[in-house]
Amino acid sequence: MSVTVEKCLQAWTNSLRQMNAKADFVFFGDSLTYYGDFASVFPDKVVCNLGLRGDTIQGMIDRVEQVKMLEPKQVFLMAGINDVAICSVECYAKQYEILVQKLKEHLPNALIIIQSLLPVNDKDFKISCNNQQIVAYNEAISRVSYNYRVPYIDLFTEYANSGILEKNMTIDGIHLKPSYYQKWINCIIKKEFNK
Image (tube, rainbow, N blue to C red; front, top):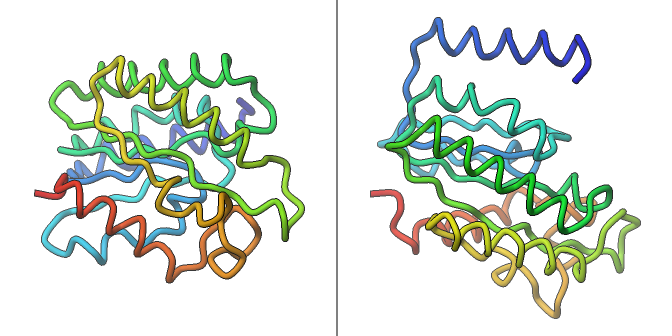
């Protein structure tokens, strides 16, 4: 971690600590989470979006303290699209397991909900990963979910029409157009975690 990133991380964590803010739901992830307007869907809940563009699983491990500061009742976790092109499935699974362990250790009373990676569109866009890889990584995530008795939401299946993320749903082959977040939100509502 660079000095600049470390200082930013410390500053954000310190800000959350001093605000003494508490959240019902925390959405914890990378840019896919960052761009989601989850707060508007749950107006009766305090929702904090801790999505960070470009973040990796290791980056999220380093940010668990931020989640802890908010003392959430539920944490909706999506991690790893930025790791797929640079990390083996084995390495990915180990890192993901460390992330879930750390969340459970720091938030023993919170319900951690794992969300699968979304499919991508490498047919119409030049991107560094493909759906074959993502299926393998989602299988690893699903095993972590099972081993740690953490609920799992399969978003991949919801979005993978004909095995890929359709061109009209995405701005670049990975990120969703704003209107297509509703499908993700519907999956959460269907699972009734939002009570």
